[in-house]
Image (cartoon, rainbow, N blue to C red; front, side):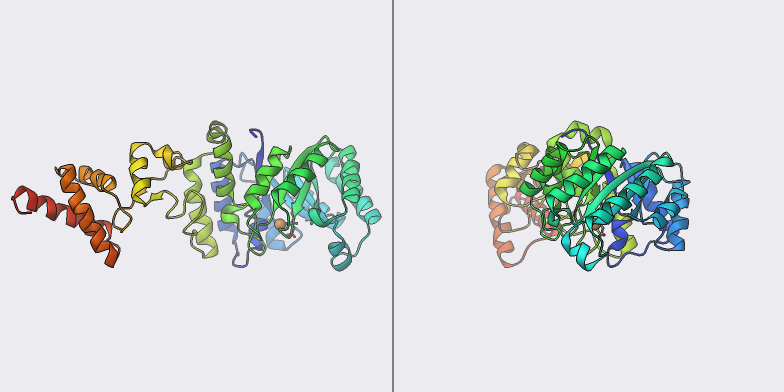
Length: 380
Ligand code: HCA
Ligand code: CU
């Protein structure tokens, strides 16, 4: 899977996150950071949403970023007319196709959807910019309806068709099957959008790419409607694991932390402790057995190289699971001279103390220095 593009939707899907409010300056800062990281596309909220949204869309188009700028609209001529005047490189068009959405949301039938799609797609194309057509809630839509709609828009010459798991119900096997089937029906690119309600968004993105999808929607830290979509960092971690050189050549991986901090700050949240790549414990090794092997060869217990992401690994030793090899490594870092037997002795002291309460790195360092001092003055 080494040919795909990221459609970064923090400034569209991400704006649907409960806490999100981006003023113009913040949007511009986020757009620049994403561009610098290297995402291929940046998707913006519909200019039809509000007057400020429209002005911000124009302002971001004028930044002259490397990334292509998209906006996201309902399948409606009113929205399309406003969108094509903003200066975007493309328009992502969406309409609900599941029976739920047809019945409880817009109330339109498939014939109406197909006619509207044709009108909007032809209009956007006549402006010489990219157009993507997507169904909302694709996994709960009728497969025959869906495929015939996609076949139709493919013959109109759309750049991409999109599959959206709007409610987060799909699993990787279902995704693989649907994308594989669609791959046999259309010749245009295939974009996928996965919500993360049941924790499948990254796996679903990967399955989609394996089945022939070409574009994946992400947002920074996964923010979006409800609990959000495929997180940018998580997708990058997954794809790095599949093809490290390709991902390293495409993206400035050591910028991921800054991008995440910027967005976390803008929406008033913390980066989760267990976040992919940047979570505070993402490269912390604890158990003595792990620590020993990591110190011999980091690949033993690390699939992501922290240095490729501008991160550093940390070996935690002030706890009851510690081992003498890890302690020995710290002794060497502190440039103390102790024999292995002495290190085993102090390790058992650390374990004893840590059985009562965990010892901080400073606590451990003090123990090691005091022990070393005692040894050289002939004490223990
Ligand atoms: C929504 C729309 C959408 C659209 C996805 C897409 C979804 O907010 O309901 O256009 O690819 O999840 O269906 O985000
Ligand atoms: Cu969505």
